[in-house]
Structure formats: C-alpha cells, structure tokens
Image 1 (spheres, rainbow, N blue to C red):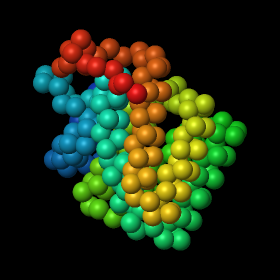
Image 2 (image 1 turned 180 degrees about the vertical axis):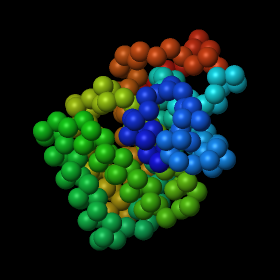
Image 3 (image 1 turned 135 degrees about the vertical axis):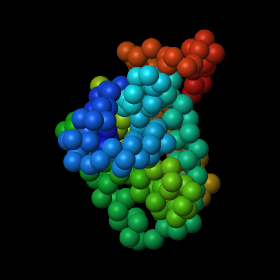
Image 4 (image 1 turned 90 degrees about the vertical axis):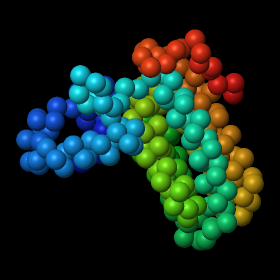
Length: 218
C-alpha cells in the first residue's frame, strides 16, 4: 500500500513518513511497518536520515539521470531477450498498449501517457523471461512515476517516444535481438537528453558534489 501511494504521488517527494501515524492509519503494528519501510528503502523509494526519520526519496536531476543511465542497460537487455521469445499474444499486447499511448498523445493526457508508458516498458521486461532482469521492474516505475514529475512529461517527446516504441516492437516481433537492443537503448538515450535539457527546481543531493558530476553526452 505504501509503495503504491508513493508511485501514485500520494506522498510528495521528500515527505516525512511518521511511523506512529502510519501504524494507526494502516491499522498495523510497528514491526510489520518497519519491515515494509526497510523493503521500500532497498527499492530506493524511501531514505532513512539519521536523526530525521524516514522520508520519501527526494528527486533531483542527478538521481533521475543516474537512474535512467541504468534504465538504458536494463531496457536494452530486456528488448534483446524479448526478441527471442516473441509470440502472437505478446505482439497483440504491445499493439493494445501502443494504441493507448497514441490516444493519450493525440488528446494530450500526460497522466494517461505515463501509465501507458510504464505498461509498455514493463511488458518488454517481462517478455525477457529473465528473473534477474524482471527484478529491475521497480526502476521503471521509479523513473517514470516517482522521479519524473508531471511537469517534465513533454508532449513533443511523448509523440516521438511512441514512434520509438513502435520501432522497438517491430524489431522484437521480427526476432531481431540486436536491433531491438539498439533501439531500446537509443530510446532511453533520447529520454535522457530530453530531461537534461529541462529545468529542475531541485539542488544536487547532499551526499554528492555537483562539480564532479557530468551531464550526459547524448
């Protein structure tokens, strides 16, 4: 429940999570609540600050771009593996998702596009049929729903992304593993470049030195 609330934006980024309040609200004891928060910390959704308690992870350009750099590798591998397991059922699911994406960008619905975008990338990862790759699924929702506020969802980029998704599906459906991986990685590189060009309100995280960070070269 806490995970879904974070994904859905019920808790703003950086919001303190008061354990006593949550235990009462969810009608659970502190022990399972602490275990849940520990799991969310492992997933990168919350952070424990010494002396300051538990907070929803704060998002900034550095965390967002770092996460997308990992996405490039994961998405590329998933697309490559998916091309080895394609079938008509999978192709049909991709067609349905792409249709919803097209509807969302035609009558611009940022929330609808985001949901369909997450569904698309989730389907690619699951189609890989690799447990280690599938273990990275939380990264998709974290980057697309948690770290990327709705104001950063650009319609022009979304329109381009739908076409890129279509090309990725074409390569997967044709069983072209190398091409599928190439297109999937290029797709994330374009997303990184688009996000890098946008303004962020957040400052670099306290545990990093912005002067030592490099902007993506894409």
